[in-house]
Image (cartoon, rainbow, N blue to C red):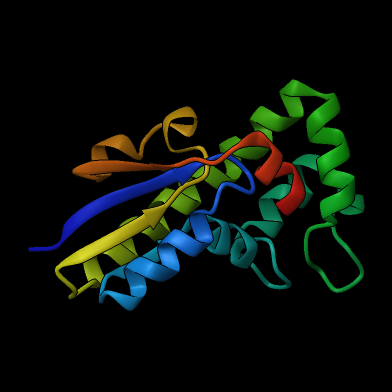
Length: 142
């Protein structure tokens, strides 16, 4: 059986570097940011419901999510942010479950930037690892 570890931390804290180290040690790594990007790429499963909810202006010319426009809307309108999360988070969790089921390594590391805040992940992992660093380091990295 695969032991599941949730990996979380703030922006620029070093989650990707930590995940890469776990991968070098033989762990399977599932990155929820990568899943979200795939869902909002051209032809991604997340795009039709996003366009249906927010309109065609949220799609870039190539059919991917217009990230800058969505970011502006989500930060200015909490209801819009919740609606976006309501579309993407269930899809991301479903894909995480699918990938976990396919893991054969002894350990799987699920990288979730908002593991505690977004809900639904704590019950998918046995342990949580938090990556942290000095705020100055985060600012320099971002």
